[in-house]
Length: 215
Image 1 (cartoon, rainbow, N blue to C red):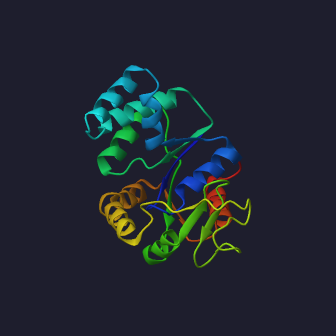
Image 2: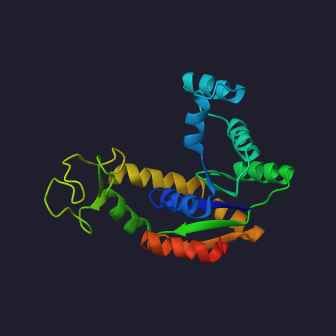
């Protein structure tokens, strides 16, 4: 069983690479946001806690998130991808303690290295088809016919509300302020590996596959 963390700022492509690993290796993606949404409708004791906290407009504690992760790990699998967690050093310590308790370990922490300025250009120019999900970019991949998807012809082309320069720079600042210390943390543990997050998704996937070895 292989357990990994995908590290990288918003827009680095962590979600895309997690999906590829799920498809190709049967790994289980543990996304904090997805787990919280699932917990709210689960009816479990932990789910009730999440619902109460979020209904009160409070932040979900690290203890609750670790509890949700523990539940997911108990379900078993061929390996887990931690996407969006940990974000801070205390969370990293808590995750390490949980894995130790279970007799598990982290095999690799994969940092998706990006150029922040190039990332801003990549994200702020991005839009998708609301019908089929095809992704476009104002500069590098515009639609052939303005206002219509090349794949399905839909005119439902969308941009994420937070895919603007001001919002993205705030998200990047928060990431580098809170999460970048994890790079040194996992480097010291000998588990940190780096890939070029600015490459095409297929090339990034090939770099990750090389790190992880045969499926």
